[in-house]
Length: 411
Image: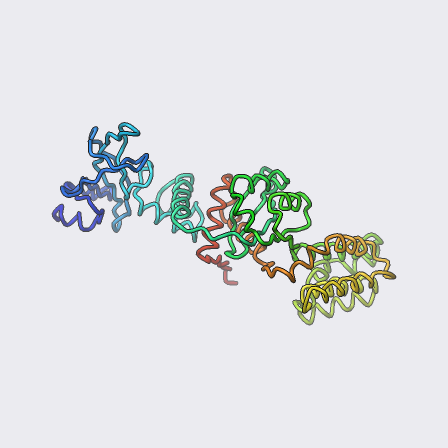
């Protein structure tokens, strides 16, 4: 095969193959390439300025996509140019986006493989180390992030995520309209969220934020009120129902577990039934709950109170929701349920943020969906030390609508 045929197969714009070598024993293909005669455009890799003077000629060896069973190595001839601003610099080549010994399309192939498989599996596929695969994937994601247009931020979601004993909590800031995370910060303090508003958003961007979906964590509220005064706080329904589930669980403990004896045996294994909505239970599970309620009326009242609280977000307007919340609180007057009385005080103290949902319609499930994607990434990657890398992976999943499919072994 002639060198011109290898040039067409390689398909590097502006470059031609002038020598090739095939090692059948090692299954290795080596191609030597240099610029075509008409390709005279020289650009500094540091500043992007066009140059005319060549300082010296060097060669660089990079790995390209394999051809069949043959691993391909390209030895490319490069120029070091004399840049008036930067001095002697290597020229910019589109096929070589970084200093790593890999071509651009090889890194893109590895990056795309990392979207559907773990770094360990991709490393075995391409005969690379795991650290090299992660470094390639990070560069691939950085180039993707730099080339795409970022959606505007008008509805903000703020939540914390537990990553483990070393990192502890991470603050996750999300764009509720586009459904993707926009920033990660270590810890969940007010200073953490302050850093996001101070370094990532301009004054005009902060004033364009219309609403923020948050839990009842006070440091986040103070930070948003300070940096985005025009933003309306809306409390997340998921976290409110979390508090209600905890109240039900406290009633279960006080009525059965702390009394011991046969009462404890009756309620054993029923915790998740009590925390599940009635409509999501099968007939068999509903029958088990009815048997439990027949033994303890107070536990039944707690479960019904939890179920009825969900209707707070199903009212026709804000005034109806306000009246429904007051009626729900009045039901607790003679019930003797301390955990629900504590919950009622919490809801009344944050009443305006709960009812703000009727003024600004936001999607509550977005924040939890983003957290679910992040947890899936953590399980598949067995943890991430680089928060920037984790953020880019989560953004890529949200932008491409990637879905994780769990495969079970046949019985």
